[in-house]
Length: 81
Image (cartoon, rainbow, N blue to C red; front, side):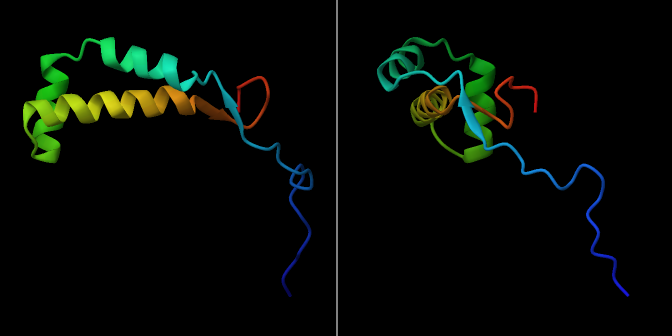
């Protein structure tokens, strides 16, 4: 017969995900617009996505902007989980 007893410590409800260190949209856009993208990063992106240098530059800047707006996710308010 299957034992449905929860493992020790598994009975608590997990903490909800929280956004930490997210930047406002305008600040993220400004950083992404002025960031220096290395030639190496451009070449890696161009090769992986088969795009031109201009397209790679634009798409990398869009990704940076989105990452900065999203911040990072953590389970605990301390950001350690």
